[in-house]
Image (cartoon, rainbow, N blue to C red; front, side, top):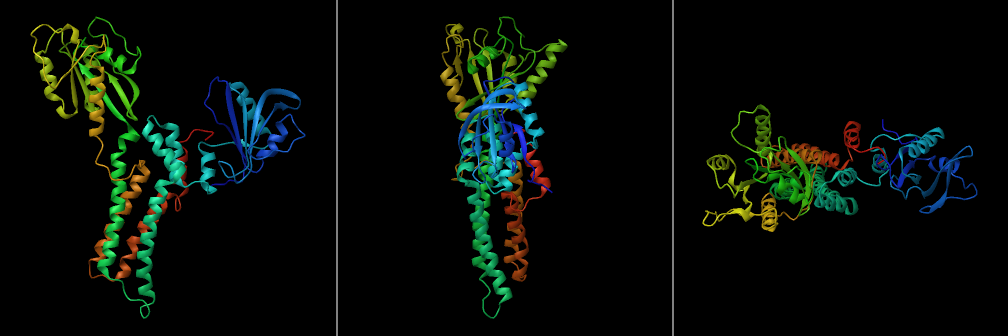
Length: 449
């Protein structure tokens, strides 16, 4: 059984040296522990105020700090909370954390602060999961969606409206069964129509999840081409850094190199691959195999052709194996095009050296990214796998209820799948969730959050 009786403490900032670190304490003894450690003994903490002083251990000064106090229930966890803002550094942080434990706290489990916020009614489970999205997000769009749900409870309100609609339907059916002399049996077609509205609502939510899948997971873009076609140069140009080694020698890149960049709020994993060519060199063959694997896993492929060499038979063989709709063909080293050399209207011609054509590359990437978005459904909600699975189960239950309504079965049979659908909606929101599910959700968090 999950308990919130103890007082917990953890380092809330990332490990390593920094100018400032934060140790967070939450629970009924948080303030008394802070009084014990804080040098200023003649003050009474007030909610939301900073206090300057020193942390000491039986008179031995540890560090100069700022202490921030929160009184329950007006804190992140809904409990008394103390934040100790000290100088960054593992030794100082662990020394202060050790003093907190020495004076009655215990080390927090991963995600336990947010779990307590959920258990104390400060947020629903979907909002708690949005906190994790904010921490782990690699894209601006997911940050916007997660912060929107955290602030406005957008997913929770949508689910609540659906639950209220189902409860109303179930109440009509149950009333007609329990009080047949006073309440007429509701019209089955009207019930079916209202169930269809609920089904449409869950379908829109699933469509939103599918459309926003790339917001959560990002997209992979692989740079492919023969050796010395300029893949690493384009890779560095897109990243505005010298991440990949660039030389005039063909075959410099022997393995895939990846970096993440943001394009239109989407996390793009850019993959620089080894040059593809016919070879019997065992190490180079391994690199080429990994290049093909990267190309098959990527949603978008940028295929580069060296304009100074021209289009080779092997280039055309490779292009024939790629999905045309997801491939951007780039004629690189545009400045080395020979007079009268054949060009192709659907290709982008680029000179990484002068950056001529880079705008066209970005525009083509943006167009391909947009092609992975489905038509707008009016929702901008990104669901995680747990939430999607709940939606699938709700849809299955509602379809069962709809089939029962259109059959000759008595109406009380309809309430069984409807009850299960409501239970799954409650599970999605965290209102009817097992301890195992909660543990699975919150163990993904870092310690201190």
